[in-house]
Length: 143
Image 1 (tube, rainbow, N blue to C red):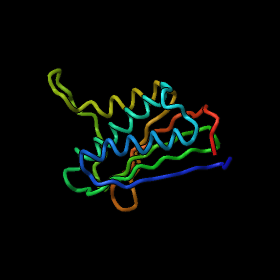
Image 2: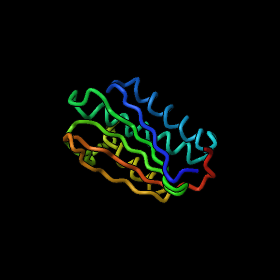
Image 3: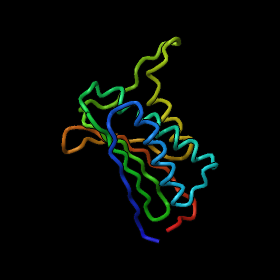
């Protein structure tokens, strides 16, 4: 098994791409040995959905595409990043009880922490940002 595996896909910033991003990550993790019915698989699908939705909804048309990176290091650490070209970093919005949005980053941060992982945001050289989640990986990896 290689020390590092990495795949990525770039998708148009369109609502239909959220499902494509989720499916891409789920298929990749399945190829790497994660059973589709594992609890962590459901959690990762939800996190990817939230990250991709943010990349589509909150870039205000300034990012025509977004990229999903999936990395596995030494069969120990899974990293998933969603990159867009909008310069503003995500921030927690004050969500009113009646409001249907504004909680995505709170959900992502909570789910990531619940799995023993962490969330980070990094600027890109092109002026955008990547939102990364890092999770422990305990599944025997398929090559």
